[in-house]
Amino acid sequence: MKKPEAEPVVARNRKAAHDYQLGESWEAGLVLQGMEVKALRAGRASLVGGFAIVENREIWLHGVHIPQYSQARWFNDGSRRKRKLLLHRAQIDKIERKVNESGLTIVPLTLYFKDGRAKVEIALGRGKKTWDKRHTLAEREATREVERAVSRRLKGRPD
Image 1 (cartoon, rainbow, N blue to C red):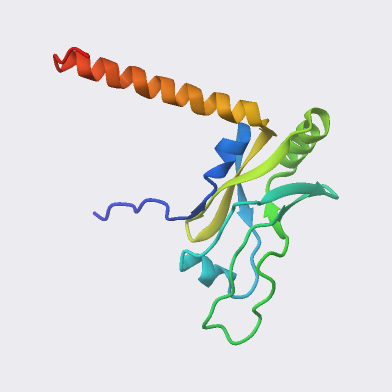
Image 2 (tube, rainbow, N blue to C red):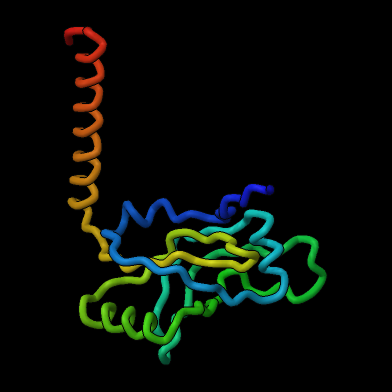
């Protein structure tokens, strides 16, 4: 029996966790045109600087870079155009309510294929201030240092 393959991740937004305090997340379908699917299957996309907004009870993804597919002869349109996200009406209403009330931002986290369809994982995020980012880095460094000390102690090396 054939083992199911892991979901092929096309792009990951690693800066999102650094720039935002991430909250609730959803999986959304992505409306693509022309040769964008082939460009994604080639593994060429960037989510850095991308965001989503709610317009007329629809969610649109802005700033995501999907480059032109080099072997396409026609219908190679803009690489940073806005793209519609597909979610259930209740999910869109919930996201819109949270964005309007709390001043959160909709941030794309990962872009991948699932059952042959392009999907985007989006999350609600609150922008971090510079001191928040420094504090997070300091905490991470402190936990690493504690882990190193424990590892040294377990190995029997006094330090």
